Length: 249
Image 1 (cartoon, rainbow, N blue to C red):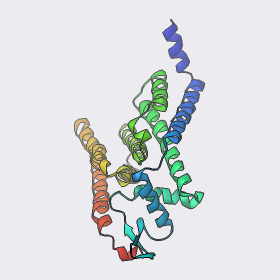
Image 2: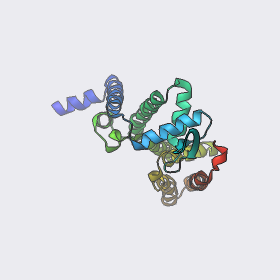
Image 3: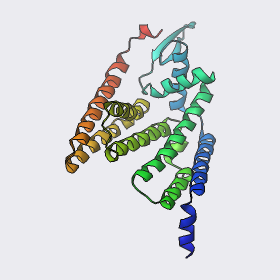
Image 4: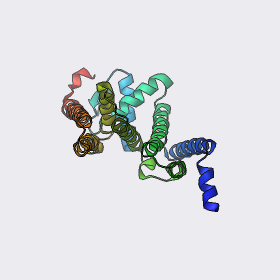
């Protein structure tokens, strides 16, 4: 009887809203506590600062025999995504560090909110969804305490998964929706190179689902997402290493 009361209480709408807000706040507090400038983040924040200054995503260096002359070297050890997003937010906030923190907080909202929306699409009960939401808010994930844009990449990947399931379940047919989905799917590898293999999971899932469900709409949608993802990742890998330095000085 007690378990039934707990499930009933966790299924209430006001409790659901409270748990969602609490989970987002707890996740944000955790992220703020562990926020730090490590090698990955520091180099990419320098890239964001130089991008705002009109030097592209670069690191400024000087010669040992002439400290007065700066040379701006393109950053190729990391993808440019984090620097680009932080630079856009810094253009609004006026501060690189605040922009980086704001990007993390936005990503946390996306992570918690759309993880919950995925469970809703999968027809999970309200009390199960609320329990999962609480765990998402308090669990100390590995990516939450590293000085790198891992949490940002994971958040956008979760958003891509939600859009994928929404397309499959709601009979969406818009090409524009698929292109936006492909762009969202590209953001994780645009932020972290290690997400390049993971980016192909969504379009492959599309195609396999369409094959077994015998639904050409889903299969063709998967091909659109796959083609767009391949082109975007190829452009990232081919263009970034060969950006002429003279265009960035």
